[in-house]
Length: 136
Image (cartoon, rainbow, N blue to C red; front, top):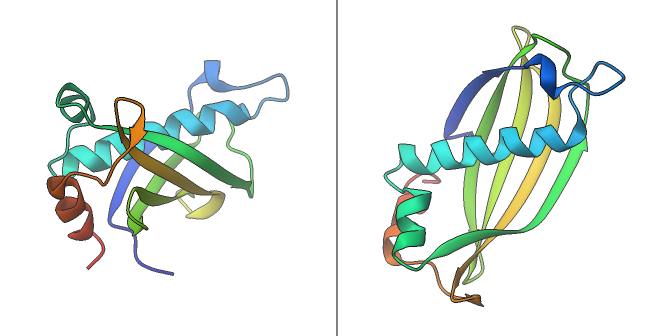
């Protein structure tokens, strides 16, 4: 596996739990999205600024593989790496590890497509260069 290029630490909040006392499955997608946006900021790309300039990165597909549950007050880290896939897609490999033991809790593959006015486009050069710089 390729190395991760970004990490963001979180703690589970009580309102994210479902009836069984584990993090609700939909909440994991919030963790992943926030980590992706922070990753983009860390490499000089601002999701909101891209939108204002007419380019949107939209989720095309998400694959989640749950390994072990997160519970209330658990600390965890979302680790991220990105790769270009074809002309209009980037794939974000994002894994969640429970701390302090770095136990794998979730494996995710998030495919994003770049669009303008609802149509797929090649990502702007600044996006390609910034994301390629993280995978060298």
